[in-house]
Amino acid sequence: MKNLEVAELLREMADYLEISNEPFKIRAYRKAALVVEGLSEDIEQIWKDKKLTELPGIGEGIAKKIDEFLKTGKLKYLEDLKKVTPVDMEALGKIEGIGPKTILKLYQELKVKNVADLEKAAQQGKIQKIKGLGPTVEQNILKSIEFSRKTSERVPLGFALTSAEEVVRMLRTLKEVERVSIAGSTRRMKETIGDIDILATSKNPAKVINFFTKMPNVADVLAQGPTKSSIRLKEGIQVDLRVLDDRIFGAGLLYFTGNQQHNIILRKISIEKGLKLSEYGLFNKKTNKLVEGKTEEGIYKKLGMDYIEPEMREDEGEIELAQHHMLPKLISYNDLKGDLQMHTKWSDGSNTVEEMALAAKKLGHEYICITDHTGRLAIANALDEKRLLEQRKDIEKANKRIDGITILQGTEVNITENGNLDMKNSVLKHIDIVIASIHSGFKNSKEKITKRMLKAMENEHVDIIAHPTGRLITKRESYEIDLYTVFDAAKKTDTVMEINSYPERMDLRDIHVKAAIKSGVKLVISTDAHNTDQLHFIKLGIGTARRGWATRNDIINTRSLKDMLKTLKK
Ligand code: DGT
Ligand code: CA
Ligand code: CA
Ligand code: ZN
Image (cartoon, rainbow, N blue to C red; front, side, top):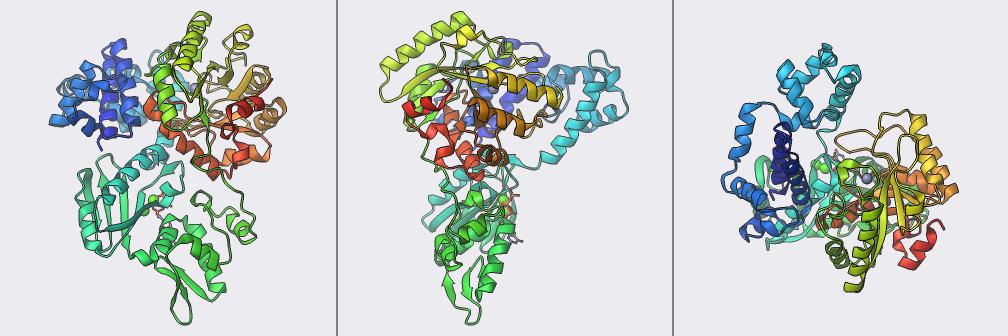
């Protein structure tokens, strides 16, 4: 699939347009990039079917650019822009705190073309001398380079999962493939992925390997043997495939799912029982006879323990609980009845209320909450009091027209620098669900940010705190916040904490989920979708909840609409 490549291209276009000052077009390109990135379908297929302009946010102009790129592998307009300003916009753009405007300035004044130039200039103290930048910016640039160096090797789960599912789909088309599954950290739903691991079974491994290395989305073949191979996909990520005999599928899956530490302990336990565990099965140590291999469940059972879900296999006490039959019953992937954060055309989303509702209904939801930005958040086209009333009518209309799903009106309000909300209580009072979140002042001290959050939670109208730590996986670390104090306050004020499923956010993250549950805090899993194609990312939030050992009971949107509303503040 070329979805990520096309999204990247559109984003690059937006960045270059920003230098040339075309604000309207910039937003269009960024929106289009988001849409393409979140597609579950193959962009090339949509293009072949001539349906590009049917995608939300993709008009004739952008469709033409995508068409040129898919036809020729290039974009003349972008190439020309690049000639005028020859900088590595993509890499520099990933450094938090410098946008295209600053990149242009740094190129014009210091001839900074890439991250290495940038780091050198910052180290030599040249950046702080540029008008409008200063020493704080310089420090932040150095910190951010360090951070992106640490994380750039890993890919957010959301993107890896889309690629992994695509490879699995292709392998399934081959009749020689008996069973196939995602393994490794992707199956464990870890928030970032080093490489994708896939396990298949077949009586003809050579054929499967050969097919795998020749898939159309393969960029390089890194290794190829009779039963295993590693490739790099065009979108950049590495995929390892192992092909085994179907009789030992369970053993192979257990081994390649990991994590490694979990496997090591299982092997130790096997030895204590006179057995031997490897990727080829569970064997009797004396006779070397296969005791079990077909299913993971069977192997865990023979080792005297309950089945452990992949998301829990991190050596964090799960093995002992499984031995004592005390594992929590995790929330499952079909337990959610609704999605409580999403944006529409009313603010910075690309679809209408009705389109979002129909798409959510298709996913099986019984209710959704439209939470467009309100207040003064200028970049997000936030709603004021008057437009909120108009939106209410739009939602009522959609509720009348569509059966089988209830649409609530919510809002995402910004928590200001002094902990106030940027919308009046007299307005919030009439909103079904109020979500508050921090979108500014990320560099405040820990005390200040924590205080802002506490004050917002004390507001009687605030039901949910969205993306509580503010991190962006590959871009920016969380602002500093005392989450334990926040969780205590959440419990006291009856405020729900969000597990945001947006691929770049995944916030709260797994360890926070665990801590929140320990503090007795209620949680909600939402997508923060900005178009219909992002609604399916809800599974990322569920995976995160499972990694945090959450049960159905911990998550408010597993309940029916009536019961869910009852859990909110009065
Ligand atoms: P990643 O790719 O860094 O996100 O993390 P994983 O967990 O997918 O790690 P990876 O791809 O190196 O290996 C996949 C699984 O295979 C790993 O979770 C456990 C198993 N495995 C790989 N190498 C070893 C090893 O040397 N010893 C053991 N016991 N297991 C291994
Ligand atoms: Ca892996
Ligand atoms: Ca691997
Ligand atoms: Zn937000």
